[in-house]
Amino acid sequence: MSKGERPGSRSARARIAAQQADQRRKDQRRRMFAVGGVTIALLAVIGIIVGALVSHSSSATPSAGPQPLPAGVQADLTVPASTFAAVGIGSSSTQYLKHVTGSALTSGGKPEMLYIGAEWCPYCGAERWAMATALSRFGSFSPLKGVHSSSSDVYPNTATLTFYGATYTSKYLVFTPVENEDVNHNLLVPTTSAQQALWAKYDPPGDTYPFIDIGNRYIAGVTYNPQVLQGLSWSQIASDLHNPSSAVAQGAIGSANLMTAAICKITGNAPASVCTAAPIPALQAQLPG
Image (cartoon, rainbow, N blue to C red):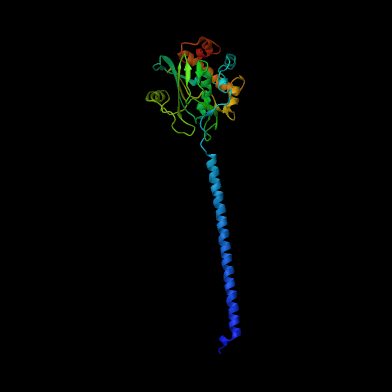
């Protein structure tokens, strides 16, 4: 019997083989744990990245569309004559109205006021408060809705109104609002060729919001600083319209008086109760043209 075949030798070899097999199993488990650890770490990193992307996506969520205004906001657009008189031109200026001499803009035998804007535009947001307040002196709106301007533009999330879907009724003039784009910059109401031609003629190249044409006699764009509306809700702005000393009233009511004076020019000073009330006659005397 050779030395390699002795029973003791076979037993030793078996023990060694068993130890080696056990070691291989331990090594395999260590490799598995190592791979598992790397996988978990990678999944954690991926989770962080996905979370960041979701968070960014959430922060960049498109602005909400038109919403019903809180109770009382639209009623507050009807401002007492005493408030208009107390504010005067406020922080606005007659320099913001440009006199033009084109053919009269009319609709259905009445003088027409044309507005072209966008729901995302913060400057349009400011002007809507002034326009709605001024026009409420000559007629009435069907229920208006509220929107906020773009969250990624200057004066972000300005609380404002939208004229989209609303109707305006007046014995004295026609108001034609064109909300050209919605809060997410999507086309909402296209301009007609005639409206586009006026926009390009008086505000070339015809792509700047807001564009306000009062009877083809006066053109306006931005008439006061939207900064005064920052951080305020619809209800707060509507309430401040009645406080002559507030920055909101100084801006929006001052601008509304300016627009009222121009509208009175195209309506032949009708109604007299509005067009002869302070400060309208004094402002008309200051208007260019």
